[in-house]
Length: 126
Image 1 (spheres, rainbow, N blue to C red):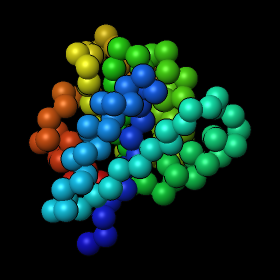
Image 2 (tube, helix red, strand yellow):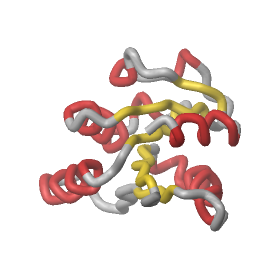
Image 3 (cartoon, rainbow, N blue to C red):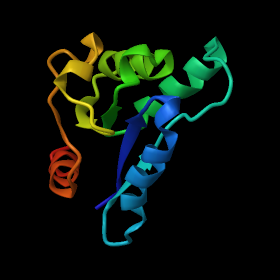
Image 4 (tube, helix red, strand yellow):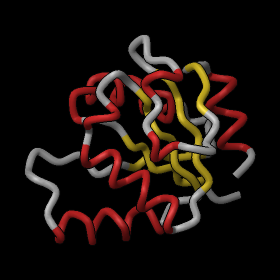
């Protein structure tokens, strides 16, 4: 069975948490890999084009929903792009976030607390 690829959308302010989250994929017994489009520069058209290509190559998307998400232009664009490309999505609350931190772009998408079982169940459903 080929490894499933999952795009991780996150606010740049949450990069340390994203690193911890992606550390789960380092376990060799887990048949999936995470990818993202971390950048230190503005989100220009070239970045958007590369990001869309990477998103298209994934089986699903996990959105790390934090108190920063509603104002994270890059992450909000990634969510919209993922929806346009028909990716299945799941929101994972991080950093004490709750449903009040869920952006409008996530309407109709289930968001859950960050547990290994929640992440694993979503990836296995792809």
